[in-house]
Length: 315
Image (cartoon, rainbow, N blue to C red):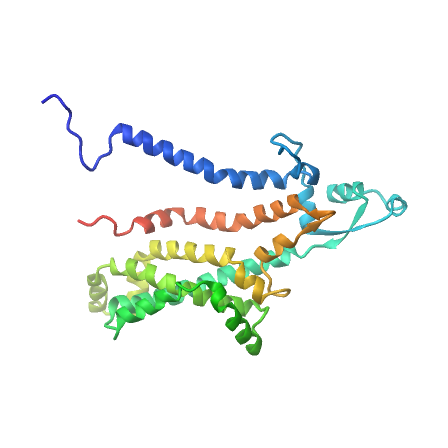
């Protein structure tokens, strides 16, 4: 028997190469739109709508200037009477016969996104951790039915409850408020947090807590000092998924906010330039909008990978 035996678990070299090629191809296809958005943010408005599309162009930060400022059109005589431009944004704006009138609303909308997304993520993970611990460690009457009810709240499309929520928020004075959006996103995300975290907490042996309570710890102290440190990977993974939803959510933000608490997703498409959509400014806003969620995911990447595979291998 000259044929070499192969393990049913260990992949063959050929299957490794095929899997690697598929992963690389998928990564390239997935990253092309991202790279195109970033490249568009450094184009001028004429280059951004050129046909065929320009792959080689002279970089410009005009899109970022237009994103953070509002501009008004003026006569050539008025522009000529002004003092020399103070910076690049002022210079490029005057070349298009416009002047900078003031800052845009992008930065306040971006700050709203930070407050609402991270605030709702913290609340959802906090409440989800407590609820998941209760379902995992205590005998809850009708636990399976309650868990299914919690999960069923994720089955409804958001638009189905948008109008009732809008009417309720209008009566309660929560329309166009950061508190209202945090409560709404928390309510939507807490079901996901409960289901994810319950699986992680179920994998933590009860004996650890029992040993801690024998040593004199209370139930709360055992939860805080024994369970939480071991559930860190699950909490990090859950936080990332909750944050991604709250960060990118558009439908509720467009319906329930219009000014004070408006977030970046409904604001970015409204960026209008001279003669139509200012695509470099839109791409610049999208690029900046990607940074916090990307940084947050990179910082927690180790916990995310461990959390996804937690409990997958049993002895």
